[in-house]
Length: 511
Figure 1 (cartoon, rainbow, N blue to C red):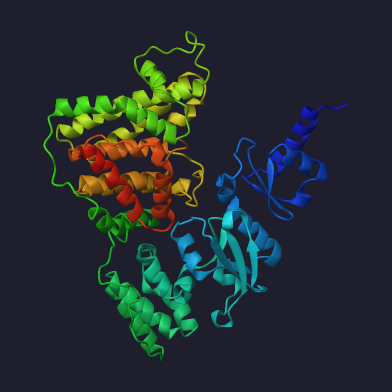
Figure 2: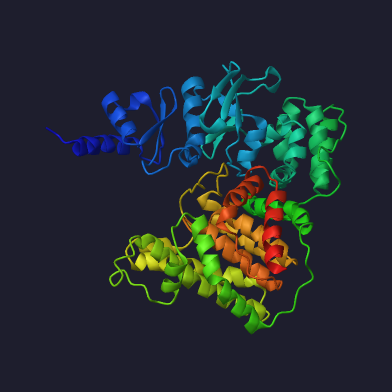
């Protein structure tokens, strides 16, 4: 008779076959009841709704949102396909966000379908899926729907012609970035002309003029007039200032990073209380960095979930730890994290020294950040805990942030996004702004498989050093506020809580 272990192995093989291609969402009838119950009991499957399951690791704690957020869009696609075939799409607003590269999980997912019935489906962690019938005025056909990043959306020109004015007011950065990707009026005019959308034409003409694209605005107005339509130009954006900071030749992800920086900057400036720059003796400053190490390592590693102590941190830093000579160190992973932190901290300190000597902080960060990352994880590789391929560089697969609705930049766009971030850092005149936004956007992009939080905090401190601010530690006791503020910035486009949080940490330490 087969043992339980052998039976579970057989079930896992069935699950692995279904997971080919990275699939995480299953229908109940994809597996026999025996396999399904066995896998659920062992923690490898969890119910989404009746007849739908998601795969997960049994090590994931109850209440962890990560498995669900990592497969939410996959579920949306497969569930809606099963109900409506291909005749459905996300709302115009959500379609535009997907086009902009924003894959954050909203609490309310609205889809339009040919056979939509105003159903509300309750999903895990307060996410709701609402299906509505195609509005007759939209005259949607299958040619208007395309798949982007794994979900059905309206094509970009049509979504822009349908979306409500509130989108431009609630999501100005995303709206400006999307408009900036339109190379020529000929791309936006077809749905306006074919459907006689005079109000939308006037709104889009005003929007393009707002961001400085006068020629497109003029052509929309002139073409609609020549086609016999009277339009009234109306700027849907609130306020007079544009936050556009990119050129038309740049990719959408570059536009996104630079726009997010430009939009957030004024709010961060308001939280900066202690400029201009302070003069610091280099040796004294570096000595103060050394003094901060133990405190900083404990809190930074604890935020990431490592179980460390001051004794272990200092013993590893002093080179007095060896797994063969110290069998009482039960958790080699924690010790390797300490060793990696020490080696990375040493590299960052060298970068700080270069900045204090007059080198531009953004340029130093661009040059050195890869060596920081290698130092952070080389002890894990040398100890055989990780494969050496992790040191190769930026990730080439999707990642998800534990507990966050924010979905980081697509792996194919990471390099462009990081170059845009370093351009912003290089051009920034305020060290506090560079520290705050550099930290946030590093985590927003999430360029590495692991270590992004630690890297972001190191980057923050390099930027702070360029302004003479003391080394700043984010303490583990403030973790919940810290993560909530990061999520508000990344998901709700509200940088104020994070700017205030960093200000409290920096100026408290700097006083």
